Image 1 (tube, rainbow over the protein chains, first blue to last red):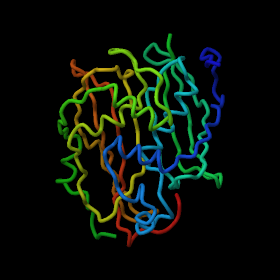
Image 2: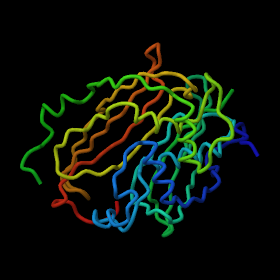
Image 3: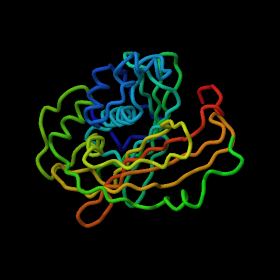
Image 4: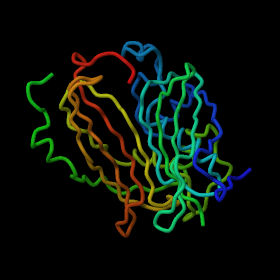
Length: 139
Length: 153
């Protein structure tokens, strides 16, 4: 079902996106960036660096926020901005939820836009990322 | 904690300076790989040249040049935020000019990291007319682990 942007209002919630980023996804991300810090893919190297295990890279998580917004938005518009403030590490192979709500719907530069508050919630129910996005709807 | 600010005039002078990084192409292969990384599945079709595409590709554009580091002022650093920003959707096949810029440095006294410096930097992508199309930003906190205290927030 496509998003009805005309009916959108402040407080509307985005559907929760359930994910479990695994080591394969992290390795593909490292390949995309062509950067390979061993603690991202080698559990022993991660533990030597003081981490509990391999972690989901922060820059990967901003893209996961983008995905949550993109899947909600569909063909109704496009994403102008997405921001991730990292609060806690997320380990690979652990479930995370991406939640969001509409914070503001407004007109700017002749365009209809919305601000979204986002969060990545870990399995303990704690926010590992606080996020924010701006979307612009097609006329 | 240092006796005086480490945010010297030499470091402040780096704020706003742009370093050209050359051109990057919004290539179909980069876009397909980026979509697969973030969504877990390969796209079922590739948009034609000139079509607007999802912004995931910006993560792949970062590798088409020699990266520019931030000044190392303190012994430890940690990533605290990332941001993607688009003035319009990217288009398949377009060529953009990339430039690195240190946007700002914020000095903090006390808190989780003790004395620390936040370095906010971005890569700016411009089209052939010079108009900004997109930005990929990050903020790194530099600190001294010996002054930091535990805790999550």
